Length: 197
Image 1 (cartoon, rainbow, N blue to C red):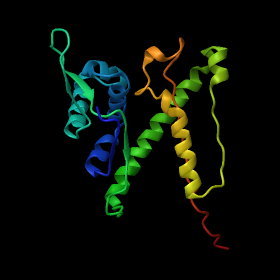
Image 2 (image 1 turned 30 degrees about the vertical axis):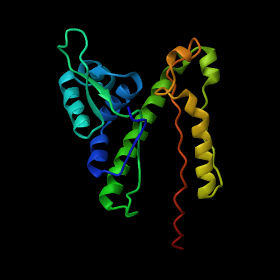
Image 3 (image 1 turned 90 degrees about the vertical axis):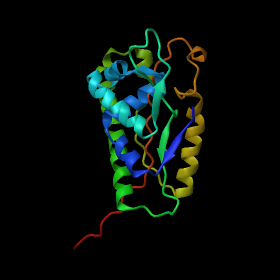
Image 4 (image 1 turned 120 degrees about the horizontal axis):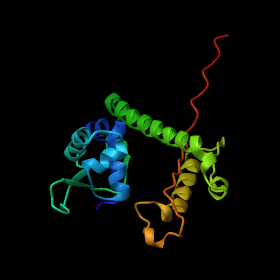
C-alpha cells in the first residue's frame, strides 16, 4: 500500500468532497479492509448507499476490492493509500475549478473535524479524570513568516508521526490506548480591509 496520495485532480477532489466518502475512506485507511455494511455504520448510511460511495472511491483509484473472507458473499474493500493530501498543479496555475474543488474538500474535512470535537465535548463529563486531564484544546495566535510556519508544521509532523494510527502497531501501544484525534490548523489571517472612512 502506498503511504500517501497527493493530488491536484479536480475530479478526484470533487469526489472526495462528500462527508460520507471521507468517512468511508478514513475507515478503510485506519482500520483496514471492510464490507459495505461495516463502512455503512461509520458513514451513517444504508449498505446500498454505502456501496455507491465505495464504487465512486474505487473509480477514482482510492480503494479497490480486497480478497473475500468467510463465505465470500459480501464484497470486501481496502484503501490503496494510508493518507492523502492536495498539491498545487505542476504548472503552478491554480484554476478556479481546482481552487473550488480544494476548498470543498477542506470545508468538508473541517466540518467533520468540528463535528467530532462537538461529539467529544458533549460527552466529556463521562470521560475519566485521566482522559479529561490529558485532553488539550488550544487556540494560539502566532506572528510568523512562511518559512517559520513550514518549519513549525514539519516539527509537529515529526512529533506526531510515531503515534499515527496508520503507522502504529496496536500491539506496541500501551494498555488503555484509544483512537485520539489531533487537529492542526496553521494559516495566515486574511488581511484587514482598509476602512472606507
